[in-house]
Structures are given as C-alpha cells and as structure tokens.
Length: 600
Image (cartoon, rainbow, N blue to C red):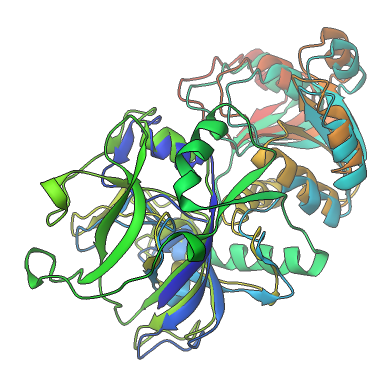
C-alpha cells in the first residue's frame, strides 16, 4: 500500500536513532514510526483498505509472518522483524520512516484510522489515559511537582508522587500494583521499586541512552518484577487503537513543520517538550513519486523525500531516497504524521553504538543518511495483490516493526517484536541487505502484517505516538498482568511514555502512583493525568513510606539510575518492568529479587 503521510509523531527513539545513541543506527536513516496518512495506491491483493482511507503505521512494517511469534500476533518479537525505519528489508534496502511525504507498507502492518480519532494528535498515545480507561487507580510519579495539577485535573490521575520528595515516596511505598516507567532519561529505579506492593511489576518503556543501575535486593525481598516492554504485535496495536478511540485517549502534542525537526530533536534531548512533537508532513514536504534508474535500485524505484541524519552528529537534513515497489503483500502509504521518539535521538547519534550509516547510491555526493521514526500514521495509496487487510484510502499506522520471520514461536504467538531477527522500522537490515528507513519521510512501503488499521474518528496527528508510546506502555501493562482493576501501579517518569502509561493504567482501573524526581510534576500527574499518588524518588522519606506498596512498576526512564529504590516500592512478587532503554547497563541489586520481587 502506498500512503501519503499526513502527520508523523516524533518519538524519543527517533532522537536516539538519529544520533546513534544506542550504537546500532544504520545510515541513511529516515526516522518516523508514528505515521498517519491517506492511502493513495494499493496492491492488487490488498483487501483491507481502499484509496482515500486514512490509516496509521507504527513501529513495524514487516516480519516473517510464519514463526510462532508472527502466527500468534506477536510480530514485534519476530526474529526477522522489520521496523518502520532503521531496519533492512529482505532485499537489503533500508526501511525509511514517516519523516517523509509518502510511504509504501505491506497492508498487514497498516492500521485503519477511526473517523472519531483526530488525525493530528493521534500518532502518540499515553499511559495515564490508558490506565484510567482500564479502570485502574493511577498514581503519576514525577520529579516535578509542577505536573501534578495536569496529571490530576487533565489526565485524571488519582494521585501524584514527586519522586524527589523522600517523604512522599516513603508514603507511597508499597502502594502500587504496577508501574509503567516511561522516562527515557537515566534515573534511579529503587524509589520506583519501593512504591510497588509485593509481587508488583515495574515495566520500563522509556529507553535511556545509558544503562540503569539495577538494585536486586528489593526484587528478591518482595518478589517484585522489573520488566522491559517495547511496542506490540499488529493485533495488539489494533486493539490498542480501538481501545483509545473508544475511550477518547489522545496525547497532548505540539504540531511542527519538518524544517523545525532539528530544533524539536534538541528540545527533546533537553526535555523541553510537554509530551509529544508531531510533524505536519503534508504542509512540510512536497510529495513526489517517480521511478528511479533500474540499476542499482531496480527493486526500489520509488523516489521518496524525507529528513535524515548522515552521521552521529544527529543533525537531520532533507534528503531523497528510494523505497521498494509495492509487493503483493505490501501496503504503500502516504505518511501524514510521524512522532519523534527518544529512540530516534539515540539512533541518530549512535548512542548505543550500533547505528549503521551506509551509502545510498544516487544521492548527491553518495552521502550516507539515516532515516528515522517509527510512530507513523498515513493514508494507503497502493496495496499489493495479496493484501486483504486494508484498501487504498484507509488510514493506517506503522510502529516500531516492519518485518520478522513470521514462522518462529515468537511470531506465531503474536510476539514478532521478540523475534531474534526482527526488522525494526528503521536501523535494521532487511534480508536483502538494505537498511530499513523510518517515518521521517513522505511515503512508506510496509508488509501489511506490520500495518495497523487506524480506528475511525481517531485523531491521526496526535494519535501517531501511540504506535510507539502507546504500545510500549499498553503491552507491558497487559502482558505482566498489571491491568487489573484496583491494582497499585507505579509509573516512573511523566514524559512522553509516562503520561501515556498513566492514562492506560487508569483506563484499566488501577490505582496509579507516579514516581518522579521532580515535585513539580505532581500537580500534573494528579490533576491532569488522574494519577492517584505521586512519589518524589529523590525524597527518602516518601520512598520509605511507599515501600512495598506497588504491585508493579512501569519504568519509562531512559537514563541510567539506581534500581534499588524502585524495587523497594514493590510488594513481594511485585514486577518492575523496564521500558526505557538506558545507554549504559544498570546496577542490579539481587537480594531484593531473591526476596520476592521481579525485574522484567
């Protein structure tokens, strides 16, 4: 399917990838995995969409479709997973994301956009709102008390904790069933773990560019679990979008033009953004699709425009690159919106050490570029002959995955994202050796399996980050059983991932405690997001009081920090789930784990 990209969210992952913070970015890299667009062309076998449909593309554009993960709707765990940008397609070309005007994607990885879901603000989605919609009691945990009013009054959080306030954290200790940690910066885990009840779970969905220090004793002592969770399979992504549309769960966004993306990346790196940036692709890039020379890109004749990075400087530049033709299982779509993720920043700057910057033949000067973004929403413009999931015109989304083997246990169990050879939306290498490029582009081509239908009436623009932030927090809440009403869940961090985690947790009916280093976020967490409690992780007294109170913790912080404080918040059997990805390893205190807590 071919989609004209309308909006694309900017995810922290985009930032990490563009700057190669994680060390595996491959250049050229077009970011963007939170795309909303309009279908402009479909393959002959596409049945899900029609031309004109509004659709979304998230982190995935391909997987093997045959392994256990894929056959069980877990394409995001497929060992041959293809992410929306930064991954390599089977033909060896790089997948490019939604920072572009068009995208071609397999219909399986495109989701229809619901009519009642706003296009502009639908690309990212939020933990607090999801949690509240699930019926949970949500506590927002933040370092800033300034966020308390927003968390409580706007987002509906039940309570707010300033993680830097020892007294608050102490009071919140042991009160949470689970925590979704959405913070992408380095931060201590122990205060969050302490908020968990025995058996509580701390789920990390933020991806710091440095490893976090993991305190093990709190996990052992209360059987708390610290887990990591990144996005979800296509089935779960569709479920998430439908759930978000039903409960009107939308993130707060700042709409920007493509020429503002470098400033946005810098602001993102400095945490100078409320929640999420969404690029207005339609008004920023002029769409153009035409065939390129048959050699050396005979299989990738579609010329695409986007914004990408050439080297670890992380600076993005306007570039032209090619995408493959729409295959029989592919969905080509115009990228409408693409979120900017912290992962994009890490990858662009090679923070994690595996970013690849290959040459793209035919570009001026043979300069290498990196195309990012895996929060992509667009409109299907073309579908392959065997596509039956979408039709031209459908609104779809592509997240972090664009490929996997589709045959292994992970893929056949809908866990494509755990496939050992998963192809990420960008930064991965396709089986043919080419690099996958993300959603910082105008058009994408993705295997239909890795495309999710965008719920009708669901905003495209502010919804695109859901394809990363939404699934990153929704999936661990569900998988680790932190979605049960009346559970006490801690959410570490109140950034892009954290505020989504709080919303999901509250939507699940849990009692949410936000754990933050800043008391300034307390008001926002409680009043806007609806968190029930707020712990300042830097406040020993607060953390002490909250010790053993959380059933689970979702840790969204991507920075390196001590885990012990967070683990201490967990009840016995509590689970701490890490969703943030620090650039450096964390120090893991083992005794708390032995005593009954878990880190996932």
